[in-house]
Image (tube, rainbow over all chains, first blue to last red; front, side):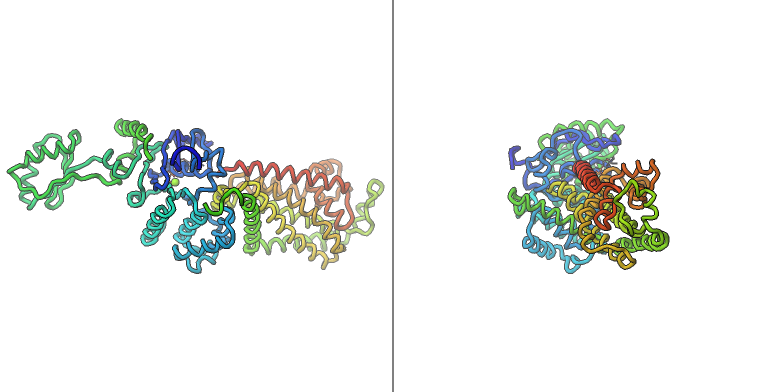
Length: 338
Length: 274
Ligand SMILES: Nc1ncnc2c1ncn2[C@@H]1O[C@H](COP(=O)(O)OP(=O)(O)OP(=O)(O)O)[C@@H](O)[C@H]1O
Ligand SMILES: [Mg+2]
């Protein structure tokens, strides 16, 4: 590996305009450190797949600088190809070959020899529980089986950087969980760097050390899941009361704090928010209001889920002034993601 | 990193050629319709043209008109003999073009992506695929040749062996043309148009079915412009010792045409994106 520190993926002002004029990726910058699992989130059409295709040398960028493992994806494409493994969003198997042939031919293209190939296929077959399905034509496979085969194929040659575009779509819960464990294990053992595109927030939260959220060709936020929640999620305050009577009493008092919003009110719990007040200040305000008048079991600050953040950041930002300012702010922030 | 150091770069390219070759052969063998079709189609042609029309008509009857101009016409060559060579040419071209053009199906089914991001030269990919196409085309040529022998085609196994290089060159040209077409047309639908506008004409407007010597002047010009004419004529020279164009010109022309087409298609394929 050469230069550029420990960044395994580094994109600077990456832009892709398709021949039909569609600006699918619009000046995106981010970087991923070695050994990190990097989650790439965003709504349909955000430009995630286009970005991944450029990173794995399938598409040429319109402008911008992109390196993978220190190699330029345009000028040193063949070097990049040697060290990456890829699972595409759409299937990329040869249906007229058996699963085993798909794995073997892949390995041969990556220069592996026969003995090594056999060993690796046995290893992966055991892990993914392929059994004798490997010797059937792919055309007869179920959707989940195809996906598993593609994932197995992407790691056949032991890559340094793995690109996974929605890898667990169509997998059952059991297989998905197994795959998550496998991904975590691979990262631990081999210092593998993983670029994971997903629509499942849970998947991102479980697996990813860092995430970037893309919307309309731009990255609108990036950082660790916690950072994002802290930064962009609107925190709320959750108060629990010993009885319904106490709660009713408290509600009447709290309503006097001007501007306060009651978000949910379930059982003996109340969740409130204030659009213009810092949560700490609001908490103290509530405390002062209720002190010695209502009995409170618990009062705590509640962080939003990554999903809340995601939805907030990727809502239609066309007309909205607030969305825009978030975008502008974040793009600057993105410079130090990774 | 296992397996991908500089040292085995060459090995990797060889393996890539092998993989693309093997894959083509396996796919060919597993597509039952294709195997059956590749035997039935020329067999049908053999029967329809060979027995129906051609057999009765001795070639030298037609050729004798031009006997003065073309001293190289061997007596006793029938239209059937003439036709068998043309049919071998036709089936080689059809199967080779199809093999080249099948890249569009790879694109449609996604497998092309896997090939395009492999750490091997695109030249090796093109070469391996071409080798596969040439192999299956040769098998078909053998099948037609054998069928024809049963139907009275007069040729020796030695002349068939001698004609193999010409068959290979023709197949090379057609495969490269197919690969080139696959980089131009975007989808399976437009392939139909290609078939009618390019593939059919290069076969039927060549010396495969039209005897050059007796063709009208303007047809002669068309035949002369079509590289396939030289390929088929070359096959004829070697297979039945009968040709209407100069053998040297045949060889040089089809060689240049196939190399040029191979260069062009490799160039386009190496710049291909998905
Ligand atoms: N080959 C193409 N030509 C023109 N436009 C394209 C092409 N491929 C994608 N696009 C457009 O580029 C934009 C981004 O597409 P992309 O596939 O990168 O989105 P995505 O974030 O992966 O979406 P999804 O979550 O649905 O997979 C979309 O508006 C899409 O219509
Ligand atoms: Mg996508």
